[in-house]
Image 1 (cartoon, one colour):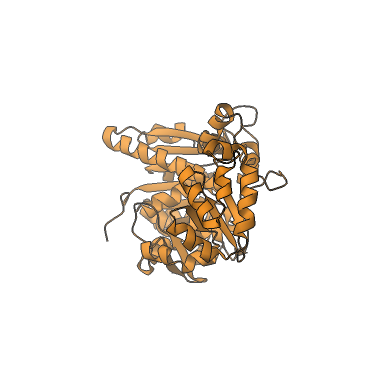
Image 2: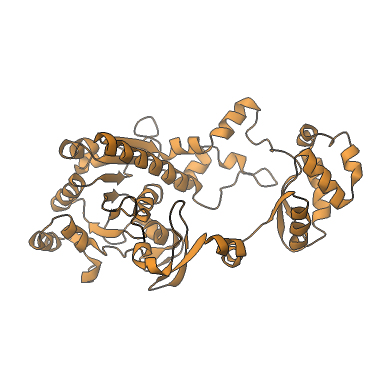
Length: 398
């Protein structure tokens, strides 16, 4: 197996939740040695996000794959000293504390860069490091509302809705990661480190940039892209259909045996169908609901009309295309059996042979080994444990 691009890279993650830890996860999946520093007791709050089983939730299983965990008390002098020592030797530091917290802990960029000038230091906040909302708590749900994402995702009654996944958190993690990757390239060519600062708010704006332009360019960010376009009920489920182009609309009329639609002045061009989207979508819906999804997919695919069945995740686990391209692998986790592992762009498929790299740690698991790798002596580690600054899963203390 080819070594990961970042094999040997030392990453210290002072982060909880989703966005910043997702950056750590992508570094780990590319071979980096990632040490997650988390609170003692319940650990990273992501471990209890949704349904939790022991030390794990679905989110934390994914976000912590292949990392080591150090359960460190950053309120203690010994804990802060250990944290600074780890950061001073790191290639990458990732943190998502509120503004000024790292300075109080003595692990802010200025302090770390003074002894480690080539460090790539990534800071993620909710609303930004300054401004009237900088100290406000921020979560994905808060940001979906604040940044307008809910406003363009409305139900049939017009009620703004939350997208039922952590869309802003994960997209923020991707933006941070691309910035860290670019900074590592710059460091490799120039030797210069950098402090990367971003926020959920900024990344949500980048994620929705086209909708922001649409608000000014078209007058509405919720304007449909065309018609007939949308999700339509079938007799057995749901179908995603996009027949907005004139050629596709003509073929759809042939399949539905509705030539009169093409002659209708409301629908005879793409722009007119956009203006009359509700009317044409309602007409199409009355036909689609009469047949099963599978039949529509076959008919529409043969006509080269854009469409797809609306799958749930169990459907995807059995899907032939997913299996053929190995978009989902399966890895055995001791407590839970085989769990899905999505393929990351540019990496080989996840497989049973990658158990070590794909298994998340319990709170404090791997912390002792990480300290030894970082140059702490056995006596120093024992002293930290004795003072309560660290606890290790292997000792049964977590």
